[in-house]
Amino acid sequence: MTAVEVSGLRVELGGVEVLHGVDLAVRTGEWVTVIGPNGAGKSTLLRAVGGLLPFAGSVSLFGTPSSRLRRRERARQVATVAQAPVVPPGMAVLDYVLLGRTPYIPPLGRESAADLAAVRDVLAGLDLQRFSARALETLSGGERQRAFLARALAQGAPLLLLDEPTSALDIGHQQEVLELVDALRLTHGLTVLTTMHDLSVAGEYADRLVLLSAGRVAADGPPREVLTEALLARHYRARVRVVDGDHGPLVVPIRPLSTVDKSIDDPGGFPGPPPSD
Amino acid sequence: MTDEPGPVRGPARLRGRWLVAGILMALVAALAGLAFGPVNLPPGSVAAELLNLVPGVHIDSGLSEREIAIVTQLRLPRVVLGLLVGAMLALAGGCYQGVFRNPLADPYLLGVAAGAGLGATVAIAIRGTTTGEETVNLPASVPVAAFAGAVGAVVLTYALGSVGRRDRSPATLILAGVAVSSFLAAIQTYLLQRNVATIREVYSWILGRLATAGWHDVLLLLPYAAVSAATVLLHGRELDVLSVGDEEAASLGLHPQRSRYLLLAAASLGTAAAVAVSGLIGFVGLIVPHTVRLLAGSSYRVVLPLSMLFGAAFLTLADLAARTVTAPAEIPIGVVTAFFGAPFFVLVLRTSRRAT
Image (tube, rainbow over all chains, first blue to last red; front, side, top):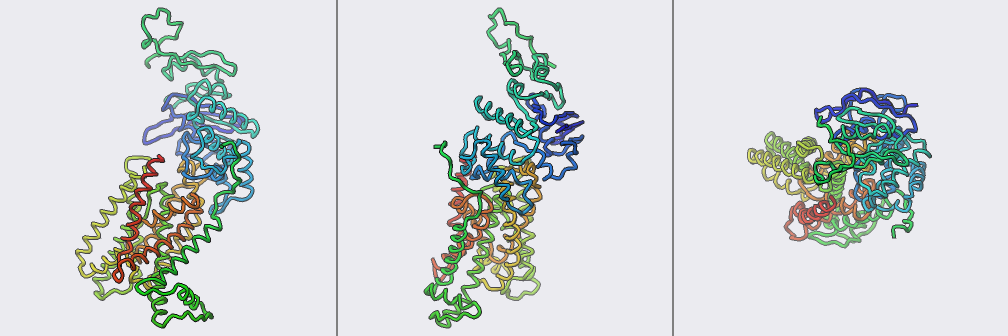
């Protein structure tokens, strides 16, 4: 079954078209990561899938056009963790994660015992119980990212959208969070759609990569097909070397030749300078 | 330290002891407001006299006829009005802080009070020129005009504070509020100059007129206060959800703009009604919700109801100070609240700067 079906997606931000007809399909249970240079429209694509901005074209979630879902229904289908979520001052982790139950709480109503139980389960699953009374703002970056994830999981939505989930984390916490997401995906049968800047990490975790460049899909396929020196040179204007890793290709940035000491005779078989479009 | 299991704790909710503390504070403040003044009466006797107001209760309080009249006819309406106005301003302040996600928001600083003031001035001025008689009671059109002015002002402040930028910093909104306040005050002054006959009345009203409070004012304020309080209190959870930002609130299934407009209207209605009967009293909406937050927690489901209780107590005590410090003369109550509020504002500004 298809979890996300996007076709002909166009989005305007401030009068400028940012996405020019994007097509994308994500199967249920799949992990797809959108990569691309800054300004390519990755976050915009995620926000459109989450129904958080107006768009032209069509977005379907689990077979239902997004436009036909009411907000609360959509919130039960899709949970989003923004790139840098707002941390409400003074809010305890438990209360923050409880906000994830909002789509199940009637307007002007309050959390039920079932909501509280669901949240306690999520906190236990993410090893966050001991933090439940702590203010969110006092948590470290890694703990905080887990709390953001917990809030999204508390929504009980089968589709998880993560915008740069690891950009604020060190390398160890990046792995910890991504392993956690992968484990949750398997245990909860979640579909995961993320954006990511670290290409090696993106390739290691995702089943499929979508390379977005200047608002268009430039490549879509398994990491081995998308993470190629030629594609990355063309779309990122970056000099990289792609080497084989245990879980997919690893992308190593290489300092451009022109700025390296000219006296070095053998450049070591670097690819040529990126084309200047 | 962090590896130790934290205390098992339920979700944020209004704890009984804080509710009791708030009610006690309001009662103590009310009793003090009734007992003390140019004539000091024993609080126990005043309490007994209050119980006598309940049908079927007869207690000998030991107060003379004249003292009973001071308590029930002079001071009681004033204290009740102080409680209501304080509750409204503190509630509105807490609500604005949530709606704008801005710790500095206060009905006075956002220009809402000035807008309500202008609306009320227009209503008084029109009435003054048409009937020409001494106005003892405020005309019923005053709260309506004040509400129109309050909503106009808050919309203007919000629009001005968001010109040219997508995310508003706390200070931008307050700067816009200052500009709007000044502009509205200028119009108000102009109107006053054109209507010299009403100038005295409006001025005494601007500086806070709990002094002339009567049951008429209480009855005028009560329905608006009830609607405003009920609406805002029912939306405490939505304000908590809004605190994670509009986009996340939307992703949680909320209509952030819809909730925001409704809450703005409700808080402005309460502010306008309070301003219409009491004049411009600043900083209550800043001091009280922040103090409550520090003491009892930051969830709006806690902050809003407790702000009403502590706001009621605070304004009643401020009014007591206003009429006793320089007795038999009275200081305008707005002067008392500003005396405590302005330093508090600096404190909040400093801590909110450090946090961002």
